[in-house]
Amino acid sequence: MDLTSRPANIFDIAGQLVLTATLQNDQLDISALKSGIHLFQLQLNGRLLQQKFVKRRSR
Image (tube, rainbow, N blue to C red; front, side, top):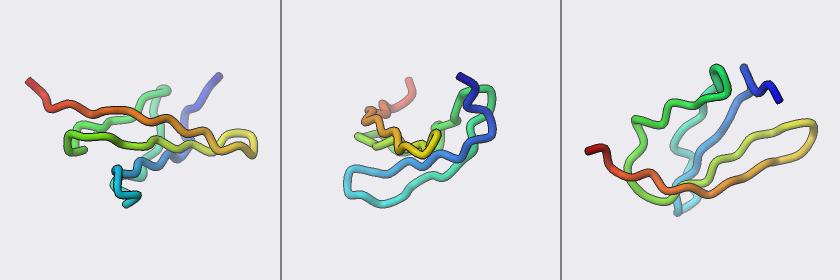
């Protein structure tokens, strides 16, 4: 499934929008996010896809 050029939103655990970006080559640059639990949202074919993930600090 090609997700290129689809807007995606990322929210922090408090529900605040922290990043809106467009997927490039089915990837999203999250390097600017702080460490913690986040929620990824993507609208696809009229459905809202959501996935919780943990951003860990870089080594």
